[in-house]
Length: 527
Picture 1: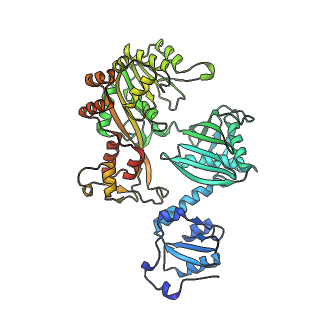
Picture 2: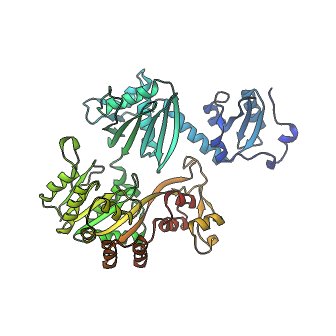
Picture 3: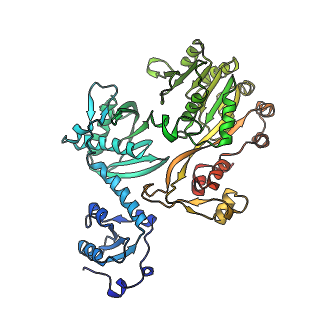
């Protein structure tokens, strides 16, 4: 049955149309078999399936007065259409995201100077060439890489399922589902293609494998490294590609400095003071992907004046710093952190950066280095600054030596920043005030909420900023930690020193209208 709006409905006011919010659009299933994505983009009209059993559709438009468009869409549906009204920005944002997702199956636009290059291989893989090949797998892999780089993703997740392959990108720290490619042979072929590019064992499917891949992109042949991780799963193998854009943080607004990474003024000052100490250990803690290593690079960039010998040992070297000796860990050749660190000490360094302290041997050498007149920077996986000392204690490190060596610790997280184009004012609810312990009059603060628009791909967020919790050790704190005092006492002494928690740092950003209370709750924990 082809149903149209009654005449009285067409002449009614806008209040008679149900509202289709951006959240509702993402929950509905589009009926692109009835009205294609290309037509939807051209006409700014979308059909959704409300009920598959009875073939009833929801039609979404931004112009309720275009009765001709409604009749055209109803002819495409061939069944009952219940019309909803969405704002032009919301509808455009949803359509833009669908276009991004669908583009993966199409070959990327050919570019004369654009090429993908496997660093370890002699041959060059050109996007232009691969788009003309008959193999859809080559096209899919190249298009996925191209699309992820264009959207600024940090990771690409390729997940095998019983029916095909799910593709997800981590954008601004959050995983977004891009699309699903159906076909039982798609996932094994895509994973095999990645193994070939990363020079991994194609025949081995039962154990995890790690490799590397390099691509060059654009007229200036910008180099981008990819870390490849292959993991066996219930449905075959999953792949994760970590994107390491070495030039991304070397220019523009996100220059490799503490200010470029979004550190608050007071936090920058404290970190610079700690980094300026001629000896001692400065540690960055946080989970994987919290920006610890990048922040250490920023610290090194700021203290590097050409008058000191700076040596790093990393796994892997993520960014190349001019004038700095950077050593990559090579476990296959017997070069681990501990062995490399011993060799570094014989190379007359002033400043040493250890990519990560993972074991007791590395920790002991790093502490001895700090106690013998070297400046040591490193990272450690811990939830907050106070958990760092528990991690060292678990490794069997003497607390007295530890506190003598460490000059400061900071814990770090990355919070998503609000999109400036669509953010709206927000008054915290009583539950938010109670849960986040918001002080003062919330209505007089600059709290905002995420909405979503075309500029931010309907997420409401664009970019990230660092928040930190800094603990500079003084005599009082050193004594308490060495005596294994209760955590409450150590935390109280730190508060008297002026330390603030990660949640307090995130709330400050929210008060400035740079992030949301929802993001504060997602990223930080109550201490």
